[in-house]
Image (tube, rainbow, N blue to C red; front, side, top):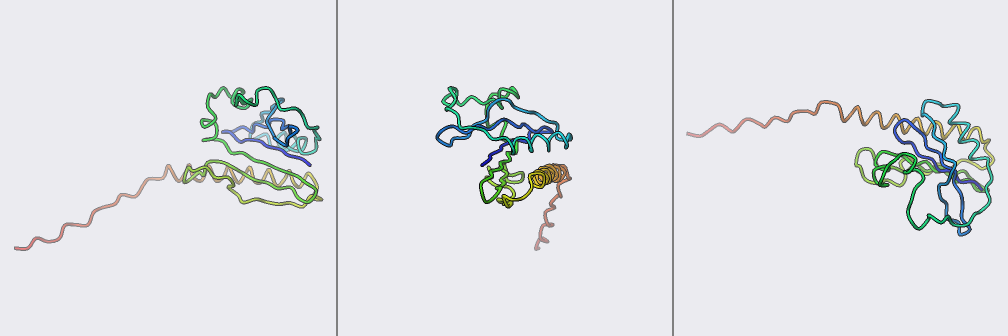
Length: 171
C-alpha cells in the first residue's frame, strides 16, 4: 500500500515524505523535496520514487499536538489558511485494487473549499507506475491550465450594464 501527498504552490511542487503512524494517521515529514513546476522530468522522478518507496509505520511525532507544519516552516508562512488559499493538494493512495487520485483546493471560481476538484480517479493497481506518474503529470498540467484560465477571466474587462432610458414623461 502506498500513499503520496504533495502540494502545488505557485510555480513549485512541494513533496514531503509521508509517514504513517501506528494508528493509520498520515503526516508530512522530512525530507521535503521542492521542485520547480517546469522541471517535469525531475518532478516525475520524485513522484515515482515516492510511490515505489515502502515505509514502515512509525510512532506519532512529538510535534503532532502542536499543529506545527514542516511545509509552513519551509515556506516561512505563519498560518495554514495563507498557504491553502493558493495551494492545491494532490493525494495518491494505492491499495491492492486501485490507485486513487484526489485533488483538493479552494475552488478557483467560488473560493470555497473543495475536497475534490477532479472527482476521484481510479487507476487499476496492475497499471505500470510510469503510467500512473504520467497521469499525475497530466492532472497537474490540467490544474495549472485551469488556474491560468480563471486568472485570464478575472482580468477580462467586465461588461458595463447600462440602465434603460427613463420612460417618457406624461404631460
